[in-house]
Image 1 (cartoon, one colour):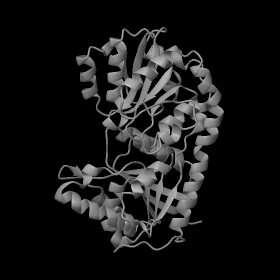
Image 2 (cartoon, rainbow, N blue to C red; image 1 turned 120 degrees about the horizontal axis):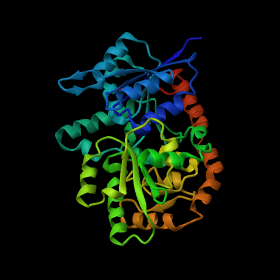
Image 3 (cartoon, rainbow, N blue to C red; image 1 turned 135 degrees about the vertical axis):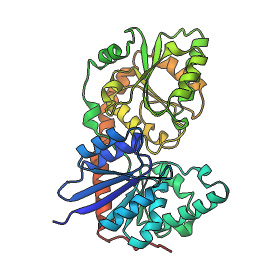
Image 4 (cartoon, rainbow, N blue to C red; image 1 turned 30 degrees about the vertical axis):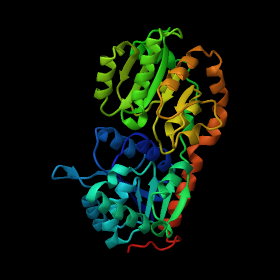
Length: 388
């Protein structure tokens, strides 16, 4: 049987995108699919390549050109030398890189929408050109697949009707590897405290994610400052971070506010399941998400979750035990942290919800739907794309 050859393109191969690729494409049989990932190199390059290779996928890195990693140059060479059945772009900017080149090759193009459209990308004269290119790119797609309802509806509002009328729009909600997170790990807390040097009498709030404004880490710092200023009658605590990216700005802010005793920074690790289970609660004060894989993982692990109601996160935590706070506000976060430290029944409530979370967020279901969509597009069953 002829293999379906897929070229996955992305500018930012880290965090949730890395997890999305690992979770979904391991369900694509290797005797039926040949998958190549084209990406810009990042600080997680080596680990990303190891993880993808273990999942049966090849990684190709974009070559620097005058100091910039331009995806379209490497894409042109790949498309010229190989016959792909489908291009699967993981963000709209990567899709725009592919659009002009694909006017030559006319390979079916699928976009997965993981996040919002950034207004600053379209500012100024060059921004107007980028906006036109963005709209043309969307019009050329066979399909656009959103990882959640909220993020896809938000994305569609950025595209005029005439540019999206010929594109198939599909929601396939994100899912997770439930086996990794739903299993019991009674010693996780002890091991985490030993690794990080945190005393047994301290409540551990975990933060797992990139150190970017999108993740709202500044609100965690502000909330900790409020608890400390109040005299903290709620108990001893520490915020433990397992993040990626540059944390220097936040570290400086923590030092300036004399809060260093309340934070521990651990290095990035590809598997966070054990560290997550070792925490007493997880903090997610995000400003926006696609459809948060981390929130799904936390709920499946039975760990108490404090989360904002932002785009892409509110959709996950609805009808769950999660403590939900308004987006972009530090005071409600501080109050939620205080409540978490004083509620003795909180852990049991989340443990009880684990089975429902596993049923709701199982990636096997979403991977099957994604595979069906890819088979449909690559076999030519969807409508013709418009490259005009």
